[in-house]
Length: 395
Length: 163
Image 1 (spheres, rainbow over the protein chains, first blue to last red):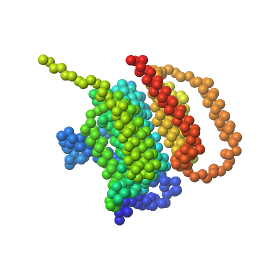
Image 2 (spheres, chains in turn green, brown):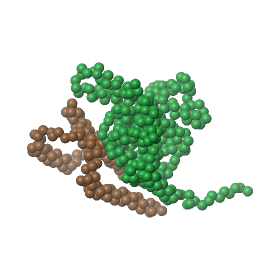
Image 3 (tube, rainbow over the protein chains, first blue to last red):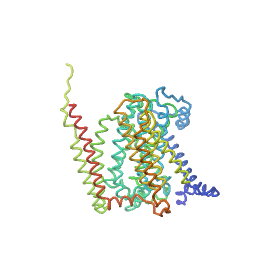
Image 4 (cartoon, helix red, strand yellow):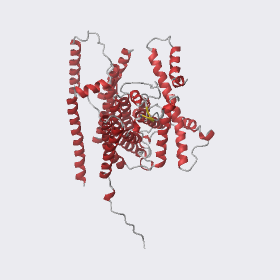
C-alpha cells in the first residue's frame, strides 16, 4: 500500500504513456519530457502562489500585524488577485531602452531558474531529468542568471538599473565560489555528481533513529550553513538584498520593469530560492529520505517537500529578523571568511573519510573545523581597531 | 530526429556567430556570442559529451561572457559608428574554414561506422584526471593560482596608491 502511494505519480505517468502507445517511437520521449515539465511547472507555480501569500502572512505575524486577509478566507486567494493585477497592468518599456535585450532578460532569468529545478530528485524515482552531471548542470544553468541580470540592467538604459545589476552580479560571482566549494565535500565523499547518487548515499540509519544525512557530520553541518548563506546571497534575499535597496537604487535591475515582466522577475527569484533550497535538501538533508526508519511508510515526496518548506520558512524568518548588510561587508565576508572555511571543509571531509567515517572521524573533522574557525575569527576580529567610544553630552 | 536537432542547433549557432561578427553595437555582439556558445554546448550534448557541454555552458556562458560584457562596459564609451568589413579577419576565417573542410573531406575515418562506446560518465573523467593526467591537472592548477594571486596583487597596489 505504502509502496503504491509512494510511486503514485510514476504510475500515473506510465498510465498516460500507455494510453499513447499508438504513437511513433520518437514521440514517446518527447511526451514523457512534456509530462515532466508540466508537472514541474504545475507544482512550483502552486508553491510560488502559496509562498507569496504565506511569506506576507508570516512577515506580518513577526511584525505584529495581520498581513493580507481580505481576499478569500484568511486572504488565501491573494495570489489570484495579484496575478490578475499583474496581468492587466500596462507594460511600460522606456523609450531609450534596448527593446530586445529588455524583453529577453526576464525570460532568461525565469528559464534558468526553472531549468535548475529539473535535476532535483523530488522523491523515489522522481527526478524529472536524471542526468549524470546533475550538480554541474545546476550550477551551469545558475551561472547564466548573471548574464540575464546584466541584460536587465543594461537593457533598461537607466542608472539605477545598471548599478543594481552591477551589485547583483558582483555578489553573485563572489558567492558562487563558496556555493560550489561547499558542495565539493559531498561530491567527494559520494564520488558522483548525480543528485540521485548523492541522495542514495544518505540512505540508512544508525540505531534506526539517526539518519546518515551529511548534515549529521561536522563538515556536513558547517557546509550546510555556508551553503545556505551563499544561497541567500544568490537569490538576493535579505540580509543580502543590496541589489534592491529601495532607499538607494529603487528596485535595482528591475526598476524599469512593470506588469507581467516584473512578475516574471519576482517568480524567477522565488524559483531560484526553491532550487537552491531543493539542492540543499538533496546535498545535506538526505533528499527524500525520512528522518527515522519507523516513518519510512510515509511517501518520499512528502519528506522532500516538508524539508523544502522548512528551509523556505527559515528564508522568510531571516527576512523578518535581520537588517540589510552593507556591500563591502558582504564582499569581505565572502572572500575572507566563506572561502577559507569552504576550503577547510574539503580537508575536514577528507579527514572524516580516512578516519573510517566513524566516531573518530567525526571528532577529528570537528577539531579541524574548530581550529580554522577560531583562527579565522581571531584574524578577522575588527573590534580591537576601535577605541572605546566616549560620549559627550551638552552640559 | 537527431539530424533535425543538429540542423536546428547548427542554424542557431551559426546565426549567433554571424550576429556576433556583424552587429554594430558591441554589447549586442557579445550577447550574440553567448548564443553561439550555447549552440556549441547543445551540439556537445547531442554528441553525448554531456560533461563537456556542461563545462562549456559553465565556463563560457557563466564566466567568459560575463567577463567580456564587463570589459566592454568598463573600458570604453559606446561607439555606434559604421563598422566596415574587416577584410583581414574575413580572409583568416575563410582560410581556417577551408583548411578544416579540406582535412575533414580528406580523412578516411568518415566512411567508418561509428564505434559503439559506452556513455562517458563523470566518474570515469574524474578517474582519468586523477591517474593518467594528474601532472597536467597540477600544472593547470598552478597557472590558475598564479593568475589569481597576480590579480590580487594588481588590485592591492592600486589601493596603496590611493592612500
